[in-house]
Length: 273
Image 1 (cartoon, rainbow, N blue to C red):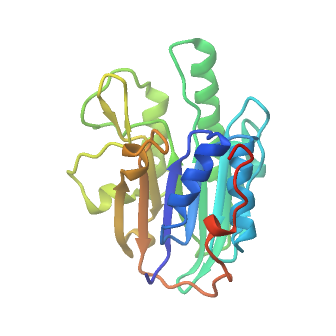
Image 2: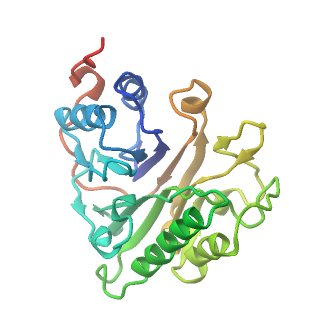
C-alpha cells in the first residue's frame, strides 16, 4: 500500500512461545512501522527483536528494568532515534520515538505504554507523575525542526472523556492528559477524526465491559492526510494478546525502504520447540 502506515499493538509481555506466534501474525501485516507496547527484558521480546533485525528491519528496543515495561519500535523504513526518551526522567523506557523522512517532511513516531494503576496512592501517583513528565517532554521547545509532524500511538491506559460505556474510575489527571494532547500539543485523535460517533474497544475486561485504551494521535496537518484508521481485533480474539491492534495510514509517500524479508522465516525457532 502507498503512504505511511503504522500499527500499534500491546503484546502483553509474551513468553518466547507466544512471541513466536505473534511474530507469525505480525509478519503478515502490511504496515511500515510497528509500535509494540508492554515489552519487557525477556526471552519473548528478545525473540521478536532478533527476528525483525535478522529480516533487515530497523528495531529500537530499549530494555527496561527487570520489573518494568517498555516499547519496541520496528520499521521497514530507515529511522533515526527521537530524543524524547532522554527528556522523560521518570519511567523513560515507556516512551520510544523515531523520526522518519516522508514526502511531506519529517514525521516523529512516538510510541508509549502508560502505566496501569489501581486504587492505591502509590500506583495512582506513579501514573500521574509519568503523565505529567511525558506531557512536559512533548511540549519541550525546539525538540524537532520546524515543520516536523508527530504521530503519538500506543496503550495510554486511559479512555476518552465521553467514552461509551461511561466509567467513574478514571481520575481528573488522566482526562487532563488526554484532553491536553489536543489542547496543549495540537494532536488529533486519529480514530475520532474519521469516526466521530463510532464505538470501539481495544480491551475487554473480565466483566465483558470494553475499553478503548489503545490510541493514535497526530498533528492536524497529518490528520487531513489520514486515509485509514481502524482497530484490528484478530490478535485479541485469537488470544495472541489481550488487546486489539490499531492500524492507520496516511497519504504522504515515504522515501527509501529497507531491504527486508519475512521475519517469521528469518527467525530461529524458540528454544522450547
